[in-house]
Length: 149
Length: 173
Image (cartoon, rainbow over all chains, first blue to last red; front, side):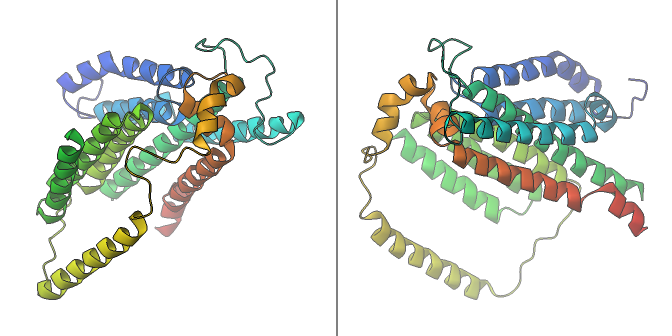
């Protein structure tokens, strides 16, 4: 808060500082419990992206991009895509594409159960969250460039 | 009953979104349609879809407001309202006619034909170990479809990043 001009008012900044961690935590919870309760990789990834967008709207783009720069977001997005494809290809070891290759699937309703499904959820979460954050960051940067001219 | 009320609300909000003059109000009316859709999914007992719809709606609303605010786009009203109204009514009539013939053969609402789905419901928990049947279908039985969906999103993100990149804008100047 060296520069008071950046971002929104003090009220919004205080509330954001309190809530943004909870939003991020809720997104991670939705992703990790995707195979037990409603939710899953897509919804959780969007919630995680929204927490960063929340930060960017309240504190200005510098603060948010310091936490997760656009290049890092691109790398994370590609990492998620490759991870998802790798999980699919590893299924070929067991016979066919997207084979659920964990022989011991665990107890139902346990956090570590269901074989590849939690791994797929994490991969999709990385892809969707980082991708949508990258799109938003690029749109905001684009707008900033226009204003500077 | 709640569903019909919700659908009426959504139709009303969509008409408001098209007809209102202020651009920001129009975007918020579109958001109201999406939130109504999320509630409709909740009433139809599809919480996965409701969460996804709610979250994506909020993200779209933020992006649309960022894109439309501070820009006074003028409302274009040319003199061809008679032609526009007649062609709109014609297309609505055509759509309703086609929908009447197409939807006649569908099973009744709430009583689907459970030919493939019944097997997923019966064997989903045993074969995948996932308690959430939706997760077991989209990531195991239909993993191929999810891969296609992920590819679409990946292509979209790459497209946006390629079109609005910094290098091209610097070279332009």
